[in-house]
Image 1 (cartoon, one colour):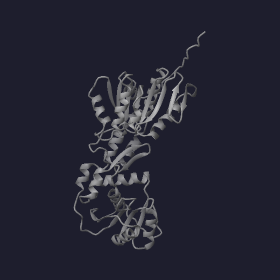
Image 2 (cartoon, one colour):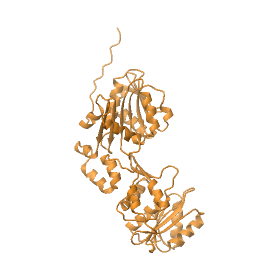
Image 3 (cartoon, rainbow, N blue to C red):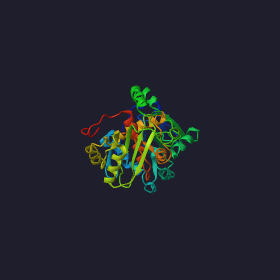
Image 4 (spheres, rainbow, N blue to C red):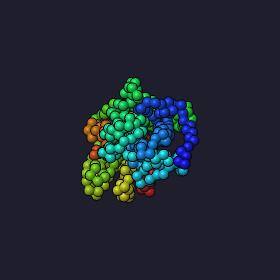
Length: 402
């Protein structure tokens, strides 16, 4: 007798109504612009698993993420969710093969050329606004022969990216496409997050960042955390006033050491930018700062430099160590000061760096950085000066670090 066909009883996990409507319909393409923690990833894992369960041996199903570690997170989550008796997996190549022979792959969008070639029967593109457009082109080619379904999800990040443009096509009613927006308010109503957490984020984050991250409202500034119009409103000539605080960002590799001083009205009154050997750098900082309070970058090579400055007894120096949390706090403080017009600075390198600065969303928060190949020394020095002015430090030689 032939073997009896395998029968598996499946019950879909609980999902919100807005998740089911957006992702589980008959449309070939679903484009979801969603806020953080509004419930995009989990229902897409469920959707992709269901597509593969209905598939056949030898068919491929893809989960695409901007970078490999994010794809690995989805791989681990899928493995935890599926009963172990129903699949086998390959940790090295990141695939899960179901008992029906359908295989779910977890891939990175970092190298578009690696995404061509396969026939794919269903696909999720996660954090689409952070994936390269060339990767979308490659992914689209893999579902041509199969007419496979695609779910495109992610936070909004400005308006100058392929995912934003595709979302507008879906929103306009293009055939066989559905568009939906998930916000933190939707998630709160569904019980996924608390309203208190949303309000705390509203208080903690610059308005532009909050509106993109929690309300899924794209900015016009393409991911600039300060706001291009707000940056220009704070441009003013160097003040002739006396410095009340300094911020110093120390050179890394071929970068610049930058010092910015603010007067009592928070206008920039001194701006120093140079590349010198460390001994000359220390002497220049001591000479320019005098006895004024100064907040100094103490990250990496900056740590012993700050200690040297403190041991001289020449000024009131305090170190500030950059890590993911402290840098986020520092940049958000600067963003608030700029958007409220509480700090002023001259045209030139400061404005150029502020306008080029970017932010992106990560699992651990918001990451602030200069574009690849550009400097952020002026931004860091200005942020340190703003921090020093907002919370004046009474410093002694024994006060080595915050």
